[in-house]
Length: 119
Image (tube, rainbow, N blue to C red; front, side):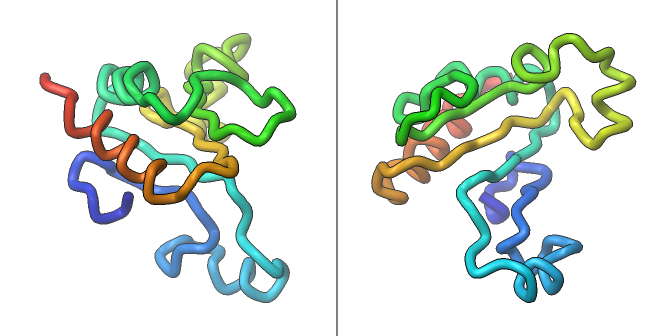
């Protein structure tokens, strides 16, 4: 996702570009299955969340399926935008929880959803 020009930021400690990558390498045996990505606009973030097909638009269901969440309207809806931004949750961010689907299918799903957005 880092290489996609429509993605403005990727939050994942497994990436060398992450500010805490070296610490994560020392403390973790793996980097986990949660990734956050940011876009230039709220509209684009919401479009991707609503148009992904393999990722299910939902909060954690305790299952094994891959989920995509839009925190401002889901997990952090009771906070003001100012409170969310102060905690590192901008309105342009999506949270991805990777399940057991083939990673190629997940990447393709995101690329299609991102690529289908038109201003």
